[in-house]
Image 1: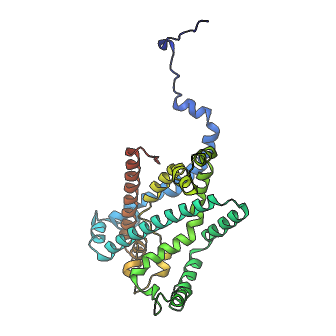
Image 2: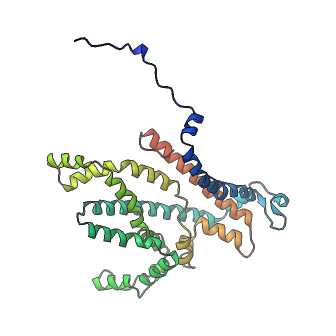
Image 3: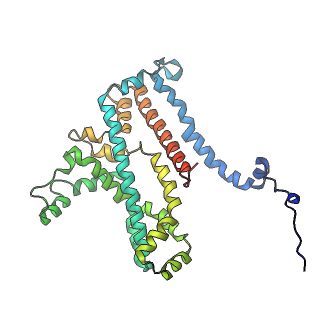
Length: 318
């Protein structure tokens, strides 16, 4: 019996489809994406025309074309003010706390739920943990203020356990503010963030767990060597996206919980933008300049994180 030898030179590589051929073959999907594309262009990109206000002494009665051009003076003013520098610090610190606490808590909860075999209990825990995501932030902050008040349940527990001798003034000391924001965000969003990791875990091949069990791996070892590597790509994509939002610590929690005693720790870039734009003497150019600075830094962080992941040969977003 003879075998036919194929000359590699006679094999013609398959031509890559051109853009228009691909477009024609997937035109249904393209048509379906048009409404979302228009939505993004209309509400995310079209308003960027307003960034020109950052370089003007904008007056509503004169409009964009009639307002005085001041160049970089609005940015120079912002970076000459101590309160704006503090807002950058506060924004970055609270964002970093939210990122670390939120990511770690979501992964831990997903790992624990993935190990639960009772479906009724598992679904009940999932439902209870992600329901706070749908609560208004006003309600959440109101609950937090009651819990962390001087006569609230948090102090009652600490006093009952003998961990403190007098009530802690949680809401009036700036050094506690960042951590309170982190705890509130975790309580509200941990269940919602867990959904993505649980979905990633369900896609892991069950035979990998079986092989690890045959080799003598315990439950913890299977988590360490099978589950965590299985969600690595999901973790990297979410991490890159979250790093791009490091300059967005939030607005509602900080604005609702701020007071004169914690103002140096609570004011974020978003709050400063609001105060500049709609204060007693509105300075719209300075408010837009603050928002523009935050957006540009976010884009740089996103691209930088994506590039680092690409160099490390990890899953990338772009």
